[in-house]
Image (cartoon, rainbow, N blue to C red; front, side):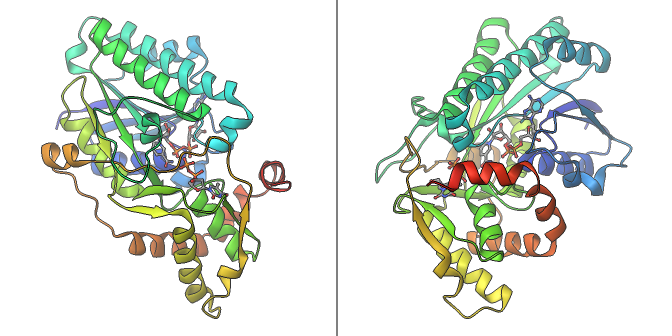
Amino acid sequence: MSDKKILITGGAGFIGSHVVRLFVNKYPNYSIVNLDKLTYAGNLANLKDIENKPNYKFIKGDIVDASFISGLFVEHKFDAVIHLAAESHVDRSISNPLEFVMTNVIGTVNLLNAAKQEWKDDFSSKRFYHVSTDEVYGALGETGMFTEETKYDPHSPYSASKASSDHFVRAYHDTYGLDAVISNCSNNYGSHHFPEKLIPLAIHNIKNNKPVPVYGKGENVRDWLYVEDHATAIDIVFHKAKAGDTYNIGGHNEWKNIDVIRLLCSIMDKKLGRAEGESAKLITFVKDRAGHDLRYAIDSSKLQKELGWTPSLQFEEGLEKTVGWYLSNEEWLREVTSGDYKKYYEDQYAKR
Ligand code: NAD
Ligand code: TYD
């Protein structure tokens, strides 16, 4: 494999840190530059184990700042971009949609412009990889799955902003010939996940004997994938996909929210030495999310058949590992839940 200089955006976040770690460790001949604004969701503590590796460099910066981004491309002469930086939480997008337009749409277009400008003489040896979500496809009823042919139908401000960014990436491929690929993945879970999303929030609350908020009746269905399996899929798509192609990534692992929470409660009862059923008493049904998508389910057979990817972990096993990580990294959890988190939690849940 030849040497490459790769810009990974959002590498201090949940999925980004797993992708950075995989690339830095697996490809010592690649030079990895992690660009991250370090918002509430970005945390350099996620990358402690690799921060001194010779093929890794961290740069703090904002993808919304167009002149900073174009300067960065001129200075570093990147061969490829793996773009993960985003505002990623649906509930925050309902409270503040504009922030999602800025980072997810404008930020993506700034990166596309810089790549187009810098690579215009030879797109063939360069690659722009955009990491996206299955939420762009909208919501399913009781049956069916999202395929790569499913029409976009986003409902939340988050998914609308990600759908828009996907369209811009395809537009730069179709209009200017930029080598671009996109993957759309289902819900991830695993270590280093900020406790605003369902699974880490529930782990945090169960651990601290606080109510576990379940929206509506807990009947909504999500398709969960272990984050390291997503990172492996990104590695494969980055290296093997044809220019302009799209892949769905998912675990074939649909769960109703209430069943995920019950399973988590039972795992935590065992790990915390509580009587079976003790943690489940914390389950509290709260007001539903506005525009709450009923069901996501992703068909990842194209990725499995064409590029040979398969997820490695069963959900129960992945959840056990995840809970184990949070229980042995109390300091990480304490730090990310101090300060602004308390206000966020109050705003989202106090009157729900
Ligand atoms: P995250 O919120 O944990 O991390 C996002 C990272 O982006 C943070 O480190 C943050 O500091 C950084 N960032 C935010 N705004 C920035 C800006 N303006 N400039 C530079 N950096 C900025 O998100 P995540 O869950 O790791 O998701 C990563 C990507 O994967 C996102 O594009 C998301 O849409 C996509 N995705 C997430 C999931 C999921 O289940 N979490 C599923 C499918 C796709
Ligand atoms: P989340 O982790 O926010 O991911 P997404 O909205 O991107 O799928 O939510 C997963 C599911 O859990 C979703 O149906 C909303 C629900 N949910 C709750 O029931 N309670 C909560 O406190 C949160 C954050 C989510």
